[in-house]
Image (cartoon, rainbow, N blue to C red; front, top):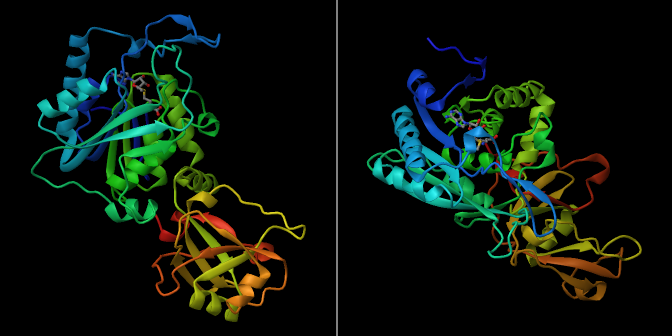
Length: 398
Ligand SMILES: C[S@@+](CC[C@H](N)C(=O)[O-])C[C@H]1O[C@@H](n2cnc3c(N)ncnc32)[C@H](O)[C@@H]1O
């Protein structure tokens, strides 16, 4: 009988301390998804001076020490074989890596009769500087996504991923920043993954209540994302200090307000499609829909224009009248606008009164776009100010 290092039965969250090779035979549960961020065997155990004069240490820990190709292959084959046994027949596995280990992992997966579904490129939007100027700057990691067998279909939430990508099939290159400082408040792990990466993977490839395994859990990024999205989780790690970071990260979530805030933060996608939410009084809203023209006063009373970040990703318009009669429309052109004078708007039958210039967004007023939620449209003071909000606020993720 094997006992967890830490466990919360209510939410189905358990951490085990030990060697994944052994734990994979002792913990006999079946899983719907495995996410594994195994050792890349990169650490050389020495420090070097970078071209910009910084000292960099290539030592993530004993578990990551460089070794011979045969040993790496043997290690990968063994844990992947054991993970395959732990997967339900419809299950899938994600394995992250860099060029140092990912081809080797791919070969093992093929050898073990997994079916590779995608190689997702995680393009870091803020990569660290590479120490040499003899190569291109390293700015990507790779995630192999494979299903257990050719014969049994896997689960993929195509509709949700497509919606999050503005109605277009989501591609296999994801631009996501490295792990943020707020994600390291409970302690630092040298190779921590960003929560947003796991959020996207889990949403795309599992259902609420599904069971997820991470055999090299580290600071438990997978477990935290799983808990926030209502999935069950089992994680293994050799090192107690990393499991303790995971436990502290997990325990914070007992406070619902913290969990809610964190879920909101991790759903922020630097590429996500945005919606402009605009209040207009009843007759004006009707006129806007009839003409397909939405206008907003350009800036404040001094006439300045404030374009906030996210504008370039605007793809939808949500019109409402003080929180009532809410309808969403697709903009004719993504992230672009025109500046019109008051006189031009008058030619289209509008009677703007407050400023000489207006920001104009054109949309297709003949077709509404379906959406699921429209919370928080009446925000007291700010109801009348147009806001840019992520599409996920309206499509009811989980
Ligand atoms: C690349 S890190 C994972 C980081 C994790 N994704 C995160 O976000 O924090 C790999 C982890 O695997 C652990 N590890 C290495 N070899 C292991 C083994 N044989 N069994 C269990 N854990 C192992 C290390 O202690 C390390 O924390």
